[in-house]
Image (cartoon, rainbow, N blue to C red; front, side, top):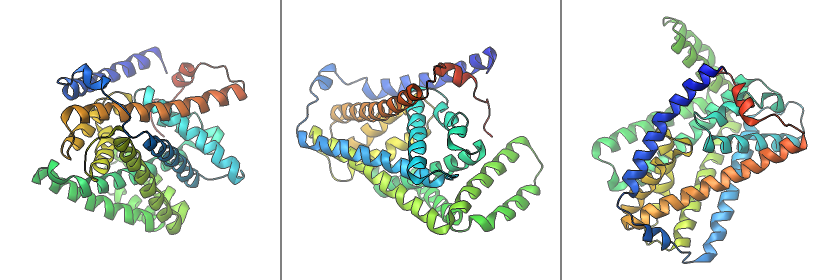
Length: 339
């Protein structure tokens, strides 16, 4: 990247930082410092649930992505090791670097490590995001209760229905859809944006087509289990800290908080995440101060766990292969646009 491109990218991060600052102020402006000091482990045994389900969730994410990616002659063990390293490094980078650079690194920087092209990696990233958003919207609609206005609930239900139909078609009929999709887009004027949308849809169809119906449905099942583990992290943390909420609170919190990543903000969705958790818990029995402090605590844990694990994996690999090139130089070499 040129110096001018770096300056433009830096300017692009400023609105996100301002959005995060506003959300943090709105979430915590009435919370006193004593509320943070009062945070205690009321039931310490539940820390095993937090640790265990965090490990399970991210191990399953690595398994899922390794099944999306072609092995290209590697043994199953070596293939999983490479995919797990690249995925965890990507997730860690997303938490500390702007503009989803972790995903861009996964697609371009590690293409040689994965022995495949950036376009194939991008197709798996698109499919991964589609699966996650579908499961999260399903959880949100099932648990949102009285938080949503009738208008918002209608939008959520329609979004769920459309995404469910679309995902089902994508999973079970990907191979047969590629030619009709290309013919459909050929009828429209060939603008750059339309061509890019067609390309991304074709990539997603290609990714699911390689897996077949059984493999695609297995990915959907794995996605449900992954987000169940995420919900259990929240539930275990609520029990650990002794918050008095009902059984729905954890599941609404995990879906609402992770959907908040769709809001443009700073890396790690700092601000929107905390407000989403606070809103969810307050509507299920927690006090405003307890809900706000819990939102910060669980977010800190998730950021530290993922960024710490990914950072250790990243540094260990660089030491092992004697790579002394600064990370910022690697980022500067990344393409400006997706394939």
